[in-house]
Length: 151
Image (cartoon, rainbow, N blue to C red; front, side):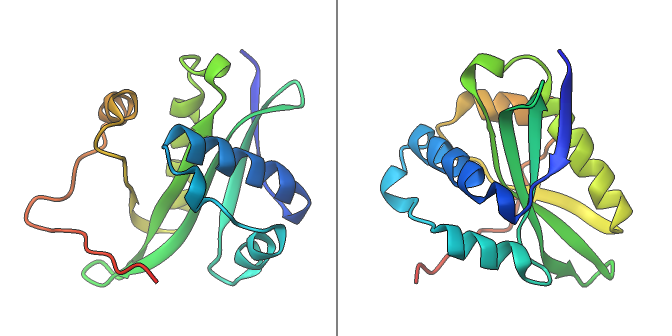
């Protein structure tokens, strides 16, 4: 399967939003996905803003990964790459695209001198959990809890 990757730009706004909506639907969170093209553009233009990696086969988008550098690992003095979203169209799953996204992510993280890559997964998403285990992802909640305040 001939898959290429490219960085998303402002011009990809509607495409990115369409993929975010597909992901929200899959995660049963459609009512939460209401990002506008303008809000996405602003996020992508911030100094440490949102980055998008787009997977394509013969010019057709088949998946996206969004990420950003969201915090500092003070013990190492390096940044942390955070993968916010990964979504691959269902008919293209199981073809190594997810693995390739992680290979690309590792390369980006190394180039930007990151300490680690982090992401989250819904507890009911067994296919994703199995995939992340194959990618040698480790659940880091040992002794650490993630708290959130919704605004």
